[in-house]
Image (cartoon, rainbow, N blue to C red):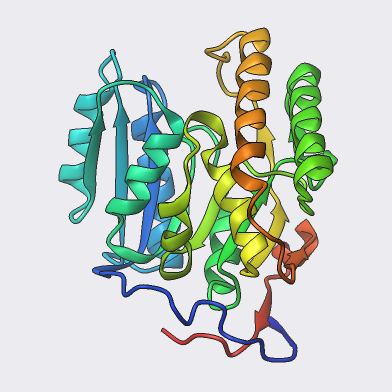
Length: 283
């Protein structure tokens, strides 16, 4: 049974958004690099949740093959052949930010669900899909509920330090800019077109830009645990993040703040399937 929270109707923050070509209700954007051990299992498992939540044949995978050197490209071709409408985007070398950009640009839907092969959540999908008409960007946060975070201490520390910088120097009101997200593309693509960051801070930039533009953003907690060894040393991650944050500061400094429209939800709200009813959009 769905419980609905009625709130004051909000203004349409995307009145000037461009028309987006929509062939499916939802596109699942997946950046992929050397994932031969997890990719097919992810596609099979997630497809069942997508069929139940969005509808059979009502979604597509957008698989961004990021220069893999193992058997991943063959598995990508198998997935595209198995789920009609799914597409492959190929990049010559690994670049997570560019992979996300190209995947979102290629999506043939009004809504996009960003995941990693080893990091997605069926409950997030169901809650975000149920609330898609009320938010332009829904963030799945691994830091919003510490009881759900099963990452090693050093990774928790790195994430804490990085997001502290975002909060102090960029006015970020949330807890996490990385990880799975649901985007309303007619609102977000004009913002994404203006983004200049690549690598790991591309999604941070479009999240900050969305908040500063006054789009409606929600943050919900998601569980996370380490499923494979990290590919980069911690010291390298720290250095890359510091360089990117300095560049991001130069990019974001000229962009003014507008009214912040942000909600944080508890995991229990998701489990009870609370749905916000704004009356902003209709499918």
